[in-house]
Image 1 (cartoon, rainbow, N blue to C red):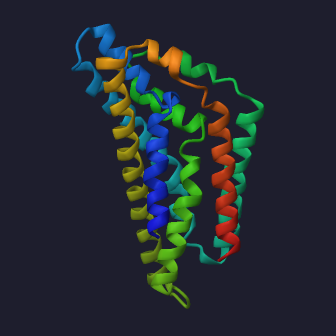
Image 2: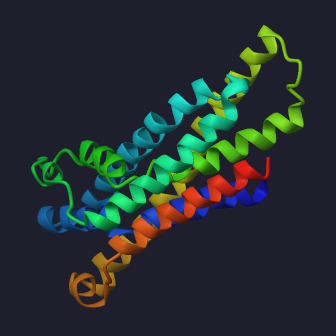
Length: 220
């Protein structure tokens, strides 16, 4: 359980460090308005959009997982979806055009759609299902009646919200630290000269997380 929660935190930091999740836009907002106060506002909008994307993906699974008799199939399908998304991004490395058409002032909307389009929210699904599995095993839901099933669904719902929140806080802190470093000390040249392309690594990480989900499903 501890390892899975650490995976939630570290995946959040990983998302926050990825420029594709938006921290350069916070730097850009501060530079365009010529005041550092614009950065926290931009970061808040970005993290809010990211949080809503995590919730939008995890909530359906929290409502499905209480169907215990179909839990194994749900976990398999979720893992294959994550792997499929990673393979798709490896083959098609082009960024969705509609993200470039969103007005710069709508950072929350951009962050939400970017997290969906890049599979950031999907990356949490196998980890989340693993947490639910352990919680279910500890709760001994075998021979559960209607009330116990409702309790299980309620617990999974709160777990989905908790995973989304913890992940997003980690993402926000990591992105904010990079944005502050670039804005006050490193400068924009750091992004163009020192940064490397994360697209392929991102796609491979999705495949890795999906494979982890398959392995975890097979061992339970």
